[in-house]
Length: 313
Image 1: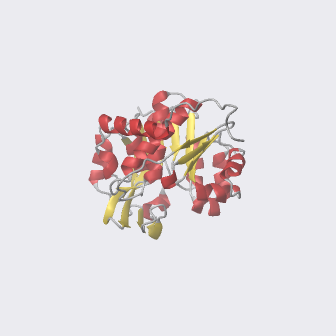
Image 2: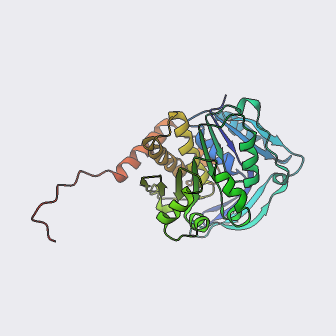
Image 3: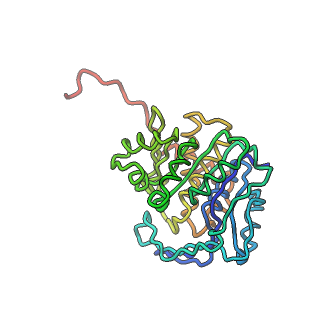
């Protein structure tokens, strides 16, 4: 039985970057997060796909031990996103969004998901996120939510209801400013955590991550890569790594959260090295351990000597 359940999208993406192009590629928030988390814990995915969805998507989830009994098959087409990136890979330009079967998505969680430890409400309509929260007979120990500017602009009342019932919110810095009305991320974190989440994780692309808790702030760098091909799914891969690690640890302490953020950053770094989910599909323990060790070396330094009277000023 899964320890962690992800509710979100499973999609077919058309992506163009300066380094190549893919069409009808496997994607979606729940798909990326599920693959990333599967390296750390047992995962179940709840989503909807259309009649055009390829079997290879299910086989890939199966290979990673991801339980996909919660994926509904529709007679309509699969949700599809078409986008492109210029050399500013921090910004995605949406060319076309086809909701298709997502318009009829009414999550029905399998009974085996009723008592999971962790629930991740990936980027999806807040009305659906609320429906999922209401449907669970027992509140999971850890509830994490992701959202985006569209829902902040168009579904803010429902989003605020979701925020009042979760433990961690993950959003990017632009969305944090939009949701809070504050330019300073420190000020934004105070306003957002007052809405309900105990912790705010702000994703900053190539500049890393900021984590705001009640009485603490933690910063993690992004991994410096020589080659980035496709940033699609990086945020979802990050979230899957963070939450998967925390679920495996069965703790939500500040130390475990910080470790999870580094794990998530490592998983996101693998994601962006190739198109679609290819960067996440065949990772070895050696590769993951090596990257985590490299992350540790990025931020470690010898203890500074004590300040002495001879210092200027």
